Length: 165
Image (cartoon, rainbow, N blue to C red; front, side):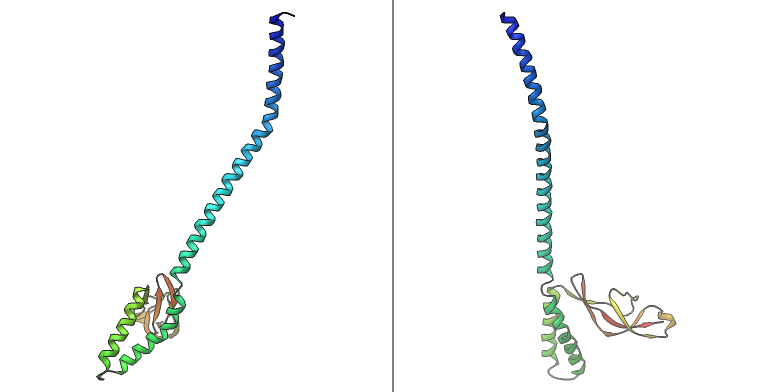
C-alpha cells in the first residue's frame, strides 16, 4: 500500500472513531445537562429554604413578646380604672407617672391602641358586644366597653364595642 492509501484508510478509521465517540458522548451530554439542571434546582430550593427560615426567625423574634404584652393588657385596664377613681387623691400624680412609663415602654415595643369610638365597625379590629338603636350612627361604634390593642400590625385584643343600628 502506498502512503496515500494508508492515509485514506487512517482517515476513514478516524471518521468512524469520531462518529463512535459522538454516539458515546451523546448520552453523557444528556446526563450532564440533567445533572446541571438538578444541581441548579437543588441550589434554588436551598436558597428558598434559607430565606424562608430567616423570615420565620425574624417573625418569631418580632412577635416573641406578644404573650407578655397580652398578659399586661389587664394591668393597663386596671391602671386606667385606678386613675379614673383617683380624681382628687394626692397619690394620683405618682400613679400617673408609673402608668405613663408603662404605656411608653409598651409603645416602644410596638403596642398601640385601636381607635374605635366614632369609627365604622370593622370586624378585623372591633368586636360588637351590643347594638343600640342610633339612626344617626348606623354601623358606627357608639361606645367602647374595653379598649383594643395592636402589636405592630397584629391585633392582640379586639376592641369590645357597642354599635349603632
